[in-house]
Image 1 (cartoon, helix red, strand yellow):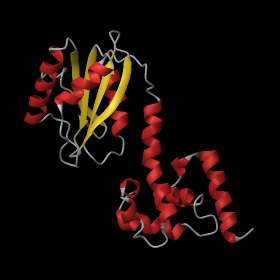
Image 2: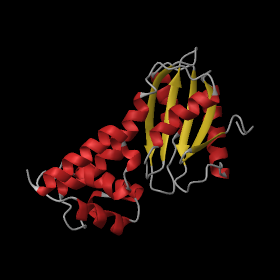
Image 3: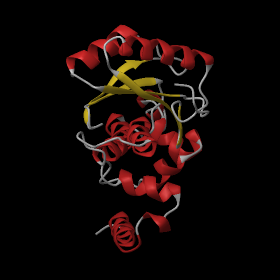
Image 4: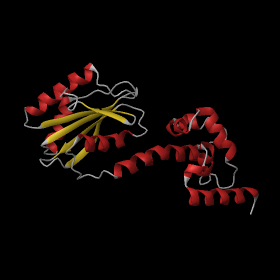
Length: 223
């Protein structure tokens, strides 16, 4: 057993006994990289990643091409790092399985906020519900750049009809980190609500997510 093997075993033992709370950020990356660089000292690469991007969050959210600019980071390593936010988002989403009843703002907000975890682009989700407020489907219908996402009322209405929805919850994220609805958000909401009402479908809410925060336009009296 080499010096690196002994270090790795100690790190793994500490993880199993104490969890990640006892690790610094560079140790977290070092430990993670064990599984893609089995015969290499991953400590310098972990430090290089943090020096380049500035934080653990920034490392996990960095584009693949940027990650590969760091010395020692190849395609496999960069792919593993990109998997972390993707798996984290899928994990959070799996807690809220389809079929869940969204009969409160808190339930709807938590359900949707999980879908924006580590999301860099602005994305519009449409949740179709049956008469009992049970989720029929949740679909990312539009994806824009970091500033905006174009919303087609026709596509939202078509999805609602195809899924035979009784009600809809609309949601999008503000990548600026501020959840307050804009004037454009209010206008879009009114257009969607009017279109759905003509088909006897209720727009229950438009939830705007920003990081760990979200705002319900229904609760805010804007719906």
